[in-house]
Every structure is written in C-alpha cells, then in structure tokens.
Image (cartoon, rainbow, N blue to C red):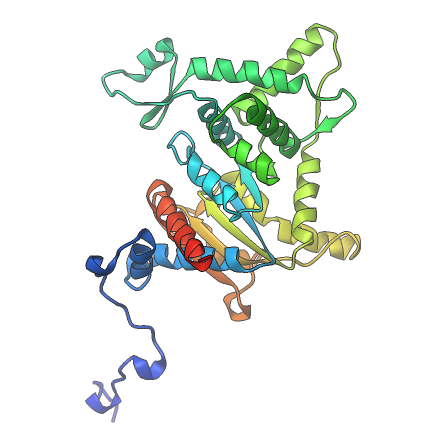
Amino acid sequence: MEKNSRAASELRDGFCDKLTPTVPLDLGKCKTVGDLVKGMSKTAFGGRQLGEAADILYKMVKEKDCFVVLTLSGAMTVAKMGLVVCDMIDNGMVDAVVSTGALMAHGFIESIGMTHFKYDQEMDDKKLYYAGYDRVYDTLELEKNLDEAELILSDVFKKINPDEVVCSYRLCEMIGEHLTKKYGGRGILKSAYDKKVPVFIPAFTDSELGLDFAIDNIKRMRAKEPLMRFDPFLDLNKYAELIKKHETVGIFTIGGGVPRNWAQQVGPYLDIVEKRVGKDFGAFRRFKYAVRICPEPVHWGGLSGCSYSEGVSWGKFVPKSEGGQWAEVFADATIAWPLIVKAVLERLKNDSR
C-alpha cells in the first residue's frame, strides 16, 4: 500500500545530514562591524549573502598567491564610495581594477577637492541643465567640475610622447602620477599609482576621460600637431598577462556592465589562445573566488544578473565541486559594500596583532 504520510521515526534532525544551523543575530554581542557581519552570515536571506561575501573576500585576500581583480560600475564615486576603493587598494586587497570611465572621472574630480551636491527636487531637469548641474539619480555633478577636469587632463596629455601608443591603464597611471604630485588628499587613481595597481577602462570612449582625449585630438588636428594614438588591445593583453602569471585568481564585482564581463572573459580568452596559438601564449585560468554585489535578478537576462554558476559553463569560474567559492549579494552596493570591506579590514587587522 502507498505511504501517504511521513512516519515520526523517519524524520531527520538536520545534524545527521551535516546541515549548518542558522543562528539568531544578537546585536548585544556585536561590538564591531566584523562581529555584526559575521553574525549576519549565520542568519538568512540578504544578511547571509552579505556575511558569506565577507568570508570569501577575506579568503581571497589572505591567500598569498591569489591575484584579486576589482570591477566597478554604476555611479559609485558620485555616491561617495571612492574612498572604499582607496581602502581596498591601500590595504593590499586589490591587484588590478577594471572600471567604467565615468566612475574614474567622477572619482578624479572628487580627488582634486571638488564637490558633488544633493539633488534638490524643487529643480526640474530642464532647470538643472541651464544651471550647469548634471544629475546622477539623487546627486549633482557640476559642469564646472568637468570643465576643470578637462584642463587638468590637457596638462597630462601634453606629457604623452608622440611616438607612444597609449591605452587606458597607461593613461590612468599618468593621471594618478600627476594628481599625486599636484594635489593633496586621497583618490582612487592616486592610490593605484602609489601601490602600482593598474586601472583598466575597457569602454574608455564612454566617459568624460575619453571625450576629453578626443577633444584634445581635435585641437591637435586643427593646429596640425601629431595626434595621440590609443590602442585598447594593449589593455586586453596587459590584463591577460597579469592573470596568466597567477595560478589562483579572485574577482570582487560591484554592479555589472562592461567592466564585469571584460574582466571575466580573460579565462576563455587565454584558453582559446592556448588552443589556437600555443601554450607559450595562452593558459587555462578560471576565477577560484568571486563576490558580486548587484541588485539585478537573473531572470531579466542581462549580464549584470548572470550567476557565477552560469559563468562556469563559459570556463570563467572554478565549479564549487572543484573548490570554487562564490557569493552573490543582491543589494544596493552603497549599503552592502562598505560593511563587507570594513568587516574584512577588521579581520585583517586582528590577524596582524
């Protein structure tokens, strides 16, 4: 006769199957951000995602030979998250940065002492345009800031040797050097220059930096001067060489877009090069560790919502069955990211005592 109910003697207690128990979050026991985030890792839903992300970031930073890539998209510097990037670079948590150009441009503006402002809803977007205020969701970038940035970048461009073909990481290095020598305070490109961390901007022309480069070339053309030359494949191959040198690689991603995919596709690129050109040129590399903070769900079909499991099928990530470790946090990065980084910094500080 078919059984229609479970017998009490057959019910299991979770521990016998080696399941991990959840634990209530006790704020009274949380003395630090690290305590809070560790406690959240034992709860559920987004709290667990955030806590597990901190655990994996800690592991990839602590693994001595792991090369860590930080990818950035969204208006994170306008949202005043630039110093979080600086903290990651300054504390050795990052070995390379892949970013949108806009994020680097607004961070560059912030690093020279210019200001962003809260959006006043009494001003509609038409009024903002004529007043020289460029709106980024709930924050304003001043057109005056961008004009000042163009003048500074023009000084940087003058240092380019006419015989040199440049790329984004080379230009970011030059900008970082210029800012370090001319301006006080902290900034992403300053930290990257100081720590020798390359910054790649795959979609360079999609930014204030790219537009200023193009404008400078137009001025050179009218003055019948040699034009600056830009080759994005120098970025691609520099990045691929960095990844190729390391057996273990990790990636920490804010948002999605071009930075995320450009950084991740290095695995298939090196694999294809090895198969079609030779082992001297290619390699088999996949990300062992991965953390992503992005609120976009998978079912929208965009790459920003693409799961790490899906990335396994492309040869981008080590599957969990082979030791891959991933965490995906479906949250606003301006909330989750500072908590994760602060918690890991506290752990690293405790380790050094």
